[in-house]
Image 1 (cartoon, rainbow, N blue to C red):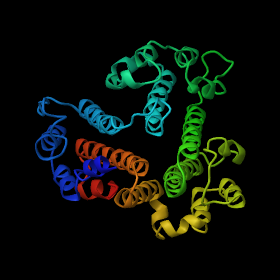
Image 2 (image 1 turned 30 degrees about the horizontal axis):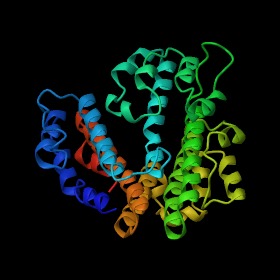
Image 3 (image 1 turned 45 degrees about the vertical axis):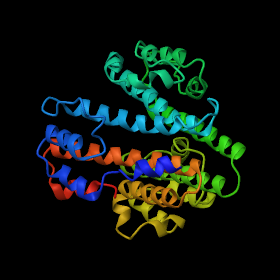
Length: 338
């Protein structure tokens, strides 16, 4: 707990974000991160003038993982511990990346993208995954993990048919959160259990809200039951009748109006529903900050720290992309989760 709080005390400040936004190129951002922030150690061997966007973002992801590894070092439990199960999210990211590449017809590109530094701690071989050329190949690589069974229902009987990426994501994340919930109920009690459930269930609900919004905005003709199948099966603040109404909304605007009548209304201002995906991240950020600040136990501190470090990486990536494409400083700032 103390280590997590100490590590977060070195997080990037609004002033440092502004300094990065005012840089004119990705190399200048890399130089600033290397010279003026807590990323100094990781970027010590980097030549900012020659680094490109993909390399920098990969190094920052490695920094995030190294932070987790330093904290997990204090955990003497077995592979089934809560802390190690949390790391399963990184494995799911890799599986979904391969699904995207297979759908795009370029699975061979994965060998240049997977994080080799995670290989030693993963439950399956990323190197073996890089040799996959089809969805059955992916299932074979994952055969000894829970992911294979979760993904089996997403396999089409028609060879060569496009993989349902959304179904894969929902299946993998459902299994991931169900395993975490079971571990929480098994090993924790009282206030700790309640806080961990709230952190995770809030993430699940915000994922679901974003999913419904995207579908209503871009695919408004989607059947409500088809949409329900894309969601993760956990709701804390939305009752069954309210969920039915949200799923049956005819448009994104109607969905937002209904959401504004739910228990989530108190987390949004009237105009925030226009920027719901951004606001959802803000809710996660403020909840995690509050729990980390007041945490008196390691599990809560670790979970909150993971959420906050992920959002910081998203902020840095937003700045890198914004500067790269010449987005104005005001617009980049408006997209940061602070």
